[in-house]
Amino acid sequence: MKNFLLLGLTIALLGAQEIKAQEHRFDPPWNNPPESALNFTVPGIDNIPDLYGDIENPQLTVFFAGNQFMVVDDLLASFKKEYPQYERIFVETLPPGILAKQIKGGSITIGNLRITHKPDIYTASKRAINEMADYFSHTQVYCYNNICLMIPKGNPSNIRTLNDLGNDKVRISMPNPQWEGIGEQIKASYRKAGGEQLVKKIMDDKVKDGSTYLTKIHHRESPMRILYGQADAAPVWASEVVYQKLIGHPVEGITIPDAQNTTATYVAAKLKNAPHAQAADDFLKFMDSPTAKNIYKKYGFTVD
Image (cartoon, rainbow, N blue to C red; front, top):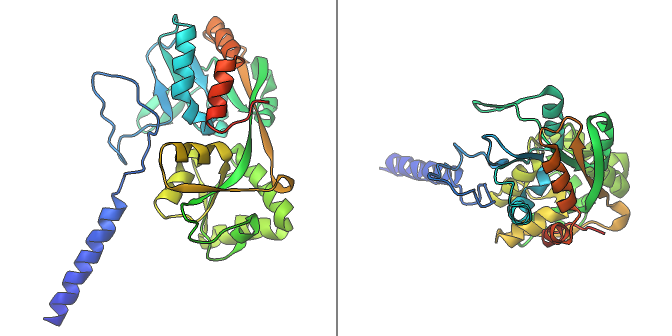
């Protein structure tokens, strides 16, 4: 009888773990999907939140720096209102390093879908744009962003500073510097806060023991790891905390002092071989408008 009860308890616990593993209440897409005859988004299975809009014969294609996915709904709606001739727009909000490889290689495959669209506009950090300067005919600065720490609501791990991330028990969701521009900037902040010792602790020792997780698509993974209890802290752009709070998700932000912080400058660039040159020009003009600037401010970016 005792063994039977233990078996039943084990099954119940496993069942509870399975339910938690299959929980999708915080899963993206967090944007509002475009209207369609059928919406067949299946959380955890068929869900492509970083491809947005009309992939068939678009009149404008924009590759946005991934952390700006939250502006897409408002930005495109306002752009279409001012330029109603553009009905079909396709947007990608993958990490900028991935988008750069896509531009250079000419294609990307996600699951079973191969995309060969050439972008009209590519937005990324000033450094990333400068590294690809030969690809562009025009560039313009349009917004700025700072780094902060995203933590679960209530801050259960009592994290206060960057140095706290060196604690062996603190689980970190860290952008992989290989394709996330923010990664190197966060490392620079670690260096300012605790020297090379803190950088080594977080980016070497804790990666090896698994308490630092290097993301593949930071602007989606880091909030989800916080929301599903898989991470205690995630260095992110300030706009990402603003957005998660706007949509009612239980997160908080910890401000990083200016002396340890980094400001990113975002640049919009028109491709020399833009398939839709006039649309690209119109979109860049719109990005410099008060309407676009107010949308970015709404989501935690700065524009001055």
